[in-house]
Amino acid sequence: MNLAGMFDRTIKPYLLILTLIFSASFLAGTVAPPAIRQQMTGVFQAVVGNYRGLAGGMLFFNILVQNVMATIFVIISGVIVGIIPTFAISSNGFGLGVLYRQAVEVSGTSKAVLEVLPYGVFEVPALLIAASYGLWLGVTVVRRMRGKESTLLGFNIEHAFRRYFAVVFPLLVVAAAIETTLILWMR
Image (tube, rainbow, N blue to C red; front, side, top):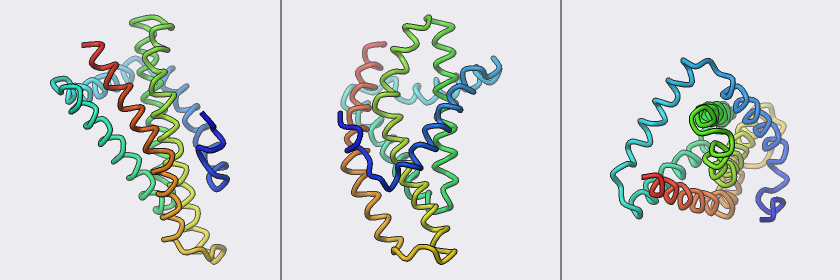
């Protein structure tokens, strides 16, 4: 996979910042107190419970729609000064860190890595790229308010969504397929 083609220069600094935030949040999740880990695991199990009775095609569709809606929301909400994209990245990093730690304690490190890896290869990069465009849009709004940006916001939003459908959406399709396969395999 050509990582250079996944995103353009526009979002490189935002992608770097959000990747650092994600990494720090992931580490925080791995060292979270047991009570917080149990609570987060319960929330995750409740979400996964919504998918339990679904057949393959419906399961895939529901996962894909959920991820598409979440990433589009992250981009659009970025115009509110980029707060929501940053929060989405930190909460996802923390949640994945918690789940990883729980999996390590239950199944061991190697199995935990295998359980988390599918998210880290496709879903997390898709979220990071979408959130980077959201943060970029938020910074653009602030720059426009300060008179330091002349590009129309609509042009920037259009650019973000062209890149979304060229890069993020395909990653989400692959992530949903892998997630569906794993859920069906673990039944």
